[in-house]
Length: 288
Image (cartoon, rainbow, N blue to C red; front, side, top):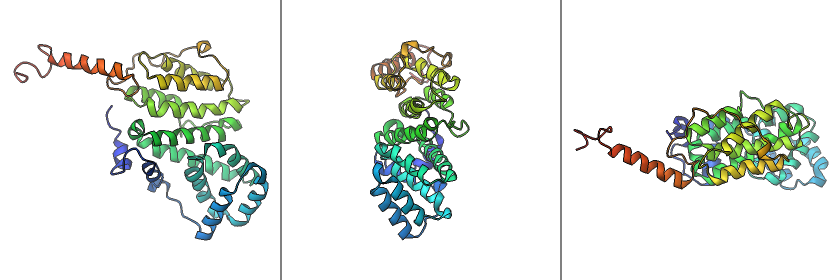
């Protein structure tokens, strides 16, 4: 796959593969937020460190006494970058906590910040294809996004994140390894939704595309498994899903990371044989 031009801008000289990289990406200038005084930051961290299901109300009162309205953008950034991206088991607690703060605009800021962080991470999607820690953060934030939108019967903003287009683009550029698990995690939010559960047309369309991708010959087993796990979460059989026909006429690159290693090897051998054939580009006068 051709390198993502934006990846160079953001990924630049960052180390490949480590959690350090992901943290560096989320320090992107695009996400720069003015920090409140140090004592506010420290007190907020202490509240989050001691937050459990049983003390949500008490901790919400404590936070309300510390955080002013002008600190809300920073609080949204702190929650998404430092907590939601790493602490999946606490997602439900964090949502309940923020609802207890009774600041609807704050939850909207959190949602928009989640889109922003995902957009920054996806700028370096080629890095995510080869970095486990990068993919883990994408999955964690995908799950978080699904829980704060779909699970609460709120729509995903397609201008911010168009799941169908993201999948089609990833298929043609060999990036499903990073993008498909993210999409599946977002869609887990449908499980708790009254509005978006099947047969909702929006959900049906994306599930049909995922089913079509699942049937791609030589697709890596772990990608097929992601779709099967999502179906299990949503209590549907993959065999019952109508397959879309959006991949017709589209092809993954021959060296795509999304295909099994055997398929990649045979594609490489095929390309080698083609280039060695008489009359093939590179043969003849220049290839002698």
